[in-house]
Length: 394
Ligand code: ADP
Ligand code: MG
Image (cartoon, rainbow, N blue to C red):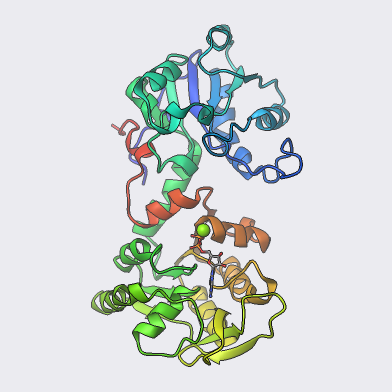
């Protein structure tokens, strides 16, 4: 659970409140004035509306894109104006006198948006002078940018050195799910971990092995485990330098009495292509010229049953190459089984959230994280600097 103060714990009426949101939304490639998914804006509204209704003067800020790309938040300002049904001006230069004058003249309930924080190199270098100037615009800081909470940047961590700092509702919700439900779960706690690489999931696997009752493996990492156990993986993606790690993980599962389950069957093809013919093989015995690209039908059945009997299910990493329809069946079936289940269902990871969204099942889950990297770090058991820097609950 979040042991940090939230907007509920402080007095905001009449105060200038700097709110760090995650407005890093995807923009249309042809026409960058079009936002292709407004999920992150929608998720930020609860905190913003709360502050507006409480009579705060709300100064929003966020990054969009990478440093050097100099993308504008203008489309976000427009979207916010629509959604809040009030004018949300975009203040183009964070450090200018004009911006200072604007915020000093705001009235209770007004909202404005500062331009992309990553237009300044000082943002990512967490420059103290820049942080101080940003902080000087406000009297209170609220961090609600869960998607960037794993980064100590000026607008996430730097400003907390100069202002009383609390969490917003989105961060509270993300922590309740990804920390609260996983560390204090309805049992049995079942995790599904897939994706491409063992290497990017070692920390997640190790952390989850201390908590879960059952660990279901999917995705390409399956084949590093299978090879570690002496099976034939054909041309499947394998990390030969992680075979020892896979062996250690299998041993830890045994020691912790976690039932770690590998797919019993696998959808295979000669190449990772929409045009390839597909077959089903035993996972342990994939023919030489074939690669495993999705979990097979028996595995779908087995995993779905386990999900049905779970108290809590946490999923990170698609179980197949879901970007190609022929290899998306397993991933869609896992999403469907979770949607059907009465368990608490939690999705972490950027691609996993995208897969659930694509399957049209986001609304059926207890929680779909808005942060890819940040949710992964939480599932690794790490502390997030943007959250650690906030004031502790008394
Ligand atoms: P997340 O972003 O949810 O943490 P990852 O980034 O770890 O997930 O993994 C997603 C990627 O894993 C997808 O691009 C998917 O195509 C790939 N993947 C899943 N299964 C396989 C497989 N059998 N072979 C190759 N790539 C796979
Ligand atoms: Mg990913």
